[in-house]
Image 1 (cartoon, helix red, strand yellow):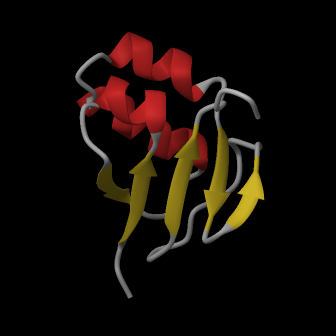
Image 2 (cartoon, rainbow, N blue to C red):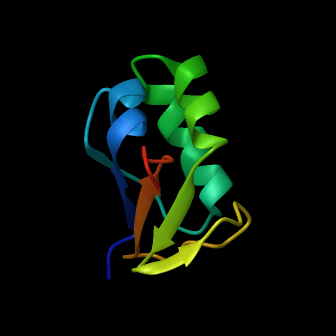
Length: 85
């Protein structure tokens, strides 16, 4: 099992970070993962603002709770609000 979490970024999150996906250390929460990703973002301030409006999928299960823990080998999809939805 991987000791990382795969973070996949979409739409405005992808644009702010400057990449479509990255790996972060496992064992933390969504908030921890987003903090790590914002530190490597092309535009950290914009990434943090976008992340504050996002919903998430953890291994295909929807959540809006940034305290959700991310087990090793999991996938976190970061989903900003989309137009029309």
